[in-house]
Amino acid sequence: MAIPGSPSQIGKCVVMVIGEVTKGKWLSADCDHLRVGFVCQIARKELCGDYQEYAEGRKCYKKIDQWLSHDAAERYCQNECGHLASIHNAKESDIVHGLFNRENNYARIGLRHSDGTYSWSDNSAFDYIKFGHNDTALGECVAMSLRDEIVKPKEWINIYSPKYPSYYQESKACYYVITSFEDIVKIHFDDLQLKQGDAFYIYNAITDSIPSKKITSTIPPTQYISSTTEVMKMIFVPGNRTNPYGNVEGKSRWKVVFESDSISYLMWPYLV
Image (cartoon, rainbow, N blue to C red; front, side, top):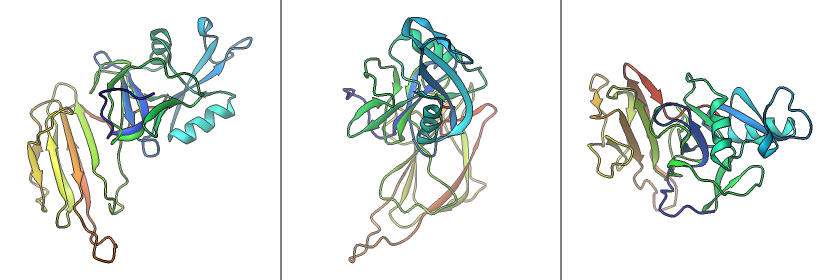
């Protein structure tokens, strides 16, 4: 099921946020690099055992405190004779959200984006939507917000983070989002190697379309960049590095240090 008006650049999977303002909202998330806790869901037959029962929906839920990729988490749940949790109404959303304490930021759920549509890993109907921010550039999977962060609790958002220290040779843009509770976000580059045509764009809010700063060359580690809000979005945009023979030339790499009195990395939520 496609979602009209939703961005499609952050990720194809989904996590749930657990907090006071963003509590329970969903976020699109990267399926492979995102490492968060998750919830398995099994069909209720007789007793739920160590799973939490939802009698009305004939389902049982269990929080798993292991940081796994989407596929690994789904295999774990299948070994339990179930799937990653699917959410079809506000009651089920409340149950999944209630499994986590407020020390966790996000929880992976079984929603994934593919070929322009979202689907649940248990193949159930995609009949309930609670996106706080949907942008599949951050990843194919989705997370639920568990606390007051980018989106409201229980809302969903996409999340993506590439690997470091590997060189980045992709042709697509790379997105980072970071938020801090009641504080601005500050960053500096411990390592920054940009090839000609590559650029970093810094934004003061996740919804901003005009960057506050553009970086196209190396800057010293002592130079700090600050947001004007509790949120900073960074987008790395590679230039055209293909030679006449079709081969990619040049390599860019970076290591960014984020600082705040109260910091939360959007790249590393918990799974459901």
